[in-house]
Image (tube, rainbow over all chains, first blue to last red; front, side):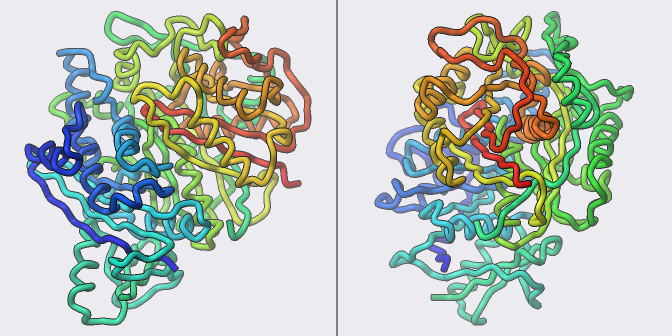
Length: 224
Length: 360
């Protein structure tokens, strides 16, 4: 059985992100991109200190990607104002973020980044399916699934912390469903917000997430 | 893993040729020449695709469609797993300022889906040089778990200046040639390529018996020189495959000619395999380092060589580095390989190891 141990949504103004990191870690994170900072504050908020050494994986998706860094890089390369900085380099952003998080979450063993191709559509069902498979195999003790966006005016993180064993704070269990289920919620960036509301309101016995293009990756949540 | 996952088809377009078989033939013949790519006043060696189009998107469409056509027909709803480091950044460069980036950063994958007439889900992966094996890992997991039955995994890295400039700014590029594990190695030579692997629950010649991704947080620009994280990942992958080091018959190295990364990989190999490892092969002197596509490009190339029982030597290697103290293959081989291990070590700290086994 897979347990939902944390459901979290965070929103920051970009200029307040570094203060949030300092508050979470007790020290600043030098030369970290916005995406790295956003990933770090969310990961730390989802996993309590006593579980940070356990084998973990991070699966995160993003609509914006490192947008500002990409624009900076293109400007440098195409308009010739300066040499591009190594940390503006496109695909290094997600891997660098994972490497910066690992000292804080020493159990972090693997990270995968899923840039999204359509505004308003996400891959929560894919991330949860992968997490479920790996937790059931015993590959990891916990898997963090996230959607992170950094725009010019806002930085938003939505998180689910899944594990093969419950905590005292566990709120729900989940299981994968390989069939169409009527009334399913669509796979959208803010799905954890809907899940959190459902957990509080207790209006239906189960909540189902389904991606229209991938009905065999539906996920059914049940309250504990 | 609940059910085995097989590689049942492949397609490839790279500097060496336009099909897996043609590329294997070229490698057996020792072809490893490359062209150059200009960046400002400098020119770097570069492995380019021989395509006539000058428009970036038209060129990309030609490359993707040609690779997909090499696969047997697949259902439109088959999920696509698309790996790239740079996606369509070359298109933005060609358009010029003001840069009109789409809201969704991987919108290029949507275009790939259209070109391939796909109506199924598309999943994009971008974790620098290990992107290809990250995509393969996800597809394999869903097939093994029974959530899907088949997947097309695509690695796509097409020419652009942003990537070249990024590596050039870090002084990571060779000015001459790729020399894996060589005492005189002086950096990477980049290249472009598109490849596809078809994964299935239906039996095929090759089975994926182990696949693990990991993190080396030693530094943002290079792995732990002692090779500790790479060692642990290879050990995990061997454990998953249920085999010992002595049962690996060939290793496809990361070995891109990078002074630091080659050393880390060499140190890790000695820790896992001792001082007499299985034959070591780097494909990058033939193809260039194709970054986010390299996992799929090198897998497809390797399997084409193994199917033909024609394993090329490691071009570019001349002299053992006493610090690495390992010798890659210097002679071609007709060995019939049953089981091979593939390594990827990515810029930024991503690691991946995969084991493939001949199943029939």
